[in-house]
Amino acid sequence: MTKKEKYVLFLVPCLIIVVLSLIPDNPKSADGLKGPSPVDWSSLKNDPSQTLGLRWQGIISNPAGKEGSWIERNLENRFNIELDPIFMDGNAYEKRRPLMLVGGDVPDVMWSGDPLQLRANLRNGFVMEIPYEVILARCPTYVDLVNTYGKEAWLYTQFEGRNYGLPTVNAAANRPRISAWRMDWLRKVGIDKVPETVEEMHEAFSRFRFQDPDGNGKQDTYGWAPNISHWSLMFVEVLAAHDVLAFDLMEQEGEVVWGGLLPGAKESLRILRSWYAEGLIDPDFPLDSRGRQIDVKFINGRVGYMYPVDHPFEHKKDEEGSIYAKTLAFDPRAELAPGPPLRNSRGQRRGRTWGGAAHIMQFGKHLEKQPEKVIRVLDMMEAIASNEVLYMEARNGERGKHWDYFPEPIVRPDGKLIKEGINMVPPYDEKDRTRENTAELLGGNCTFFFPSTFEQLFDDAYLPLADREWIERNKKTEWGMMNVLGKSDVVTSSGRYLKDLVNYQMTVYIEIVIGDRDLDYFDEFASEWRRRGGDVILKEANEMYQKVHEIYDVVGVEEAE
Image (cartoon, rainbow, N blue to C red; front, side, top):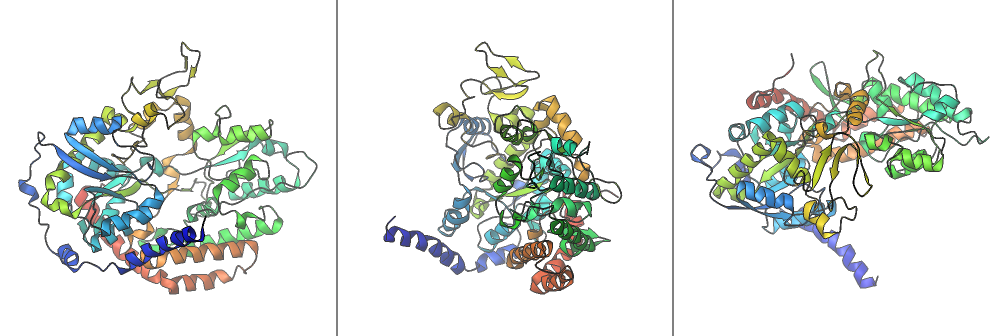
């Protein structure tokens, strides 16, 4: 690469930062947030005979998407629309999309991952209000599913009591994440079951370290290499067993608190610190900033426990590419066992979940002059949520042509074994996603046009029976703990303070665990966390928590007594 090319690569991100920093809040937009919606929704009707064009920026998990896929054409034909999809990866979403919006290229429909992005779009006049009553009238089934699987999503689309988008849901995220244990190691050191408590975990880790579970005559194994690649994974198993979500907002006696400041968090750090001092934790874990490094340590037999390993696929020894298969390739004696969340002092299993609330679909401000497009999209969302066939088509294509469900394994005439569950059928079963026939169907579209997923209602029925039973046995939804507001960045000042607070907390936690700071520093940390902006976040979180029930009442959420 030439010096000039390097200079250009340096200047591009700098230019983006400068452009974004210079974007002023649109005063007209601010005024619009105070006044009534300019759309007369009561007189608006959907004319299904009118073909409507929709420029659609969907979820960013589909960067390889291609225009014109079967899924796109199917929706166009069913709802008399012409879709113009905008596919982005995470990098384009972070860097290219802001420049698009500033330049006036605002899609009709656009996906945002968190409430902070919605508020930025509001400040700059990019999105329009969608009153609750419009969504309730057009999408009763969809609303019921949101209320059932992710009611907190309504907090993501609101601002100062008014609604500015359609909330989306990932129902599977209500299930807690789980771990994997080397069951052969447990048996080798005299333990005949997967540990269920912090105390049992400690005993297993101690034996893994000092009783040579791999039988090579060396003291070269550890119990655990904690995953610190993301705050949501850091020490979460031990913290949850102490009823703590350390990096989330929690409710205690009607008040919203920060889990990482609670006594249970300090006690968890005390335990982890003692484990580290005993040599039970891989001493290099602070350097493992990527989850893949943890995978390698588990697969090659350096540690006997790994979190998270929460998909049935990863626990199958006969599935090429699974964690189990990779571990067997390194050690043919290996046997893996799933580790459901640990039990707390009351015997209850407790594990962190994201909760079903997912993201936000927004509508461009310019659609205030074309509100019939909003109505058409809402009707499409309702139809997909109400129809299992259409829901599955939006994910996999046409049953019988592109995919099929097999209630039991079969052998095709060509001798290929077809496993139980959903399987793509020839020629769409090719692994090479660059092939024309594969792109024609998949194109990365899967959740692009309908970003909500209702696994428990639809998808689970197409899983192999063994997978369904495995999930129910190891990932019960009632074990889950989640942020009381869904996401901490739902509060207004989170964009200003939250990232710094989380990074500060992660650093302090690691320093306490490895002994670089005394445990007593925890109290000073709590004070500093509050001083750095935590008090502002907690004040706003409590104010929002008091309004949550008003929003839930409007959209029909039935809250437990």
